[in-house]
Image (cartoon, rainbow, N blue to C red; front, side, top):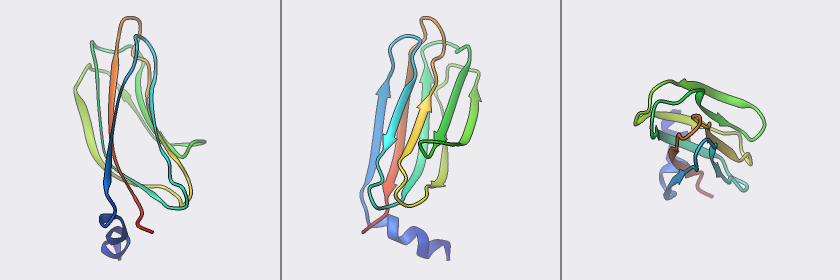
Length: 114
């Protein structure tokens, strides 16, 4: 069953989003779903130095459905199969790491084939 579900995603190109923050500011990437579903494959991050209050969330734009604290500068990351509800944008946020700390975020995602 899972292969049938994921098969619809394999046919569509994959996007890699990369973003950096200024000092002590959040980095957020929104994957726009349109009338499809979003599948997040991989998330990677780094901070220029060890963060104070480092955190990463994946949400449907309203509710955080994935939330992890980050306590080291990194780089760090993980593979994930996070599937959003149809027609729901996905927001991945790397929170500000503190004064003079710059964060970077990379998100790999696929949209459902039409």
